[in-house]
Image (cartoon, rainbow, N blue to C red; front, side, top):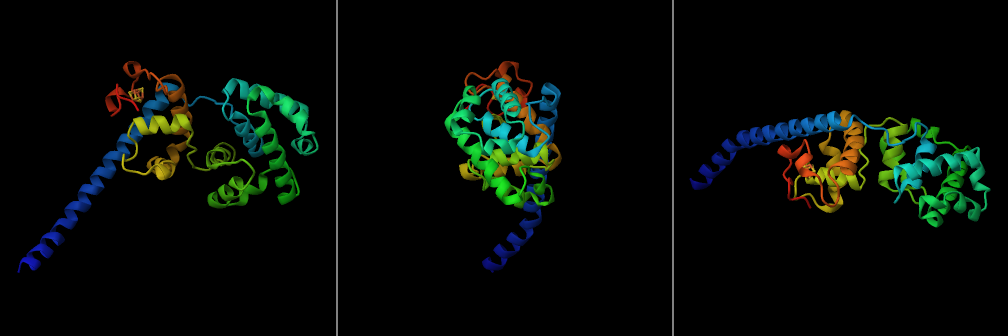
Length: 245
Ligand code: SF4
């Protein structure tokens, strides 16, 4: 009897549970939609110097690691001027390449990666450009890009988002910090799933806007140390207001 009652209770709960989960999903996605709109209104999708051409973007993002946008832009322009065509970098002595990009920092590592990337692309496609990726699915293009020397998921997703117009979310330190402090994903999501979970939480059509505006928010307002919470237009919706981690 008690088994029967428990079973029927559990059956009768199911629709309610489903309804509750559905409403809380709806609430969460509405909340995230509002946050995306506020970030867009504050920062207006600024240009971070990203490139329309996929190989330009790849080299730009490799150069951007651990440096400012301003310095990265300057070094990228200089490298492009000196190289003429990216294919010529495969023949440029490593010391020369290193000295051209020296002020972008980590020049030893970056010069080796750039040279190896150019050689791999030329060997794989018979040309030094990434247009063959246009015919690939998001998953295959991501797999190919992350197989290149020194290219991680964030760099690969920048190429997919900015040059191939795919609806993915690259997560750098600013995007991760802003997303975490705003509580856009559940606190119990393990660290190794964080980037994927954040991408899943943002609807595909909002990923570009969220990416560029969350970077701006992380650079101007939600700073790593001493965030400007009192001046933040998201303070009423932020579970980390005045208690950021
Ligand atoms: S209220 Fe503070 S912690 Fe929250 S998003 Fe704004 S600056 Fe960041």
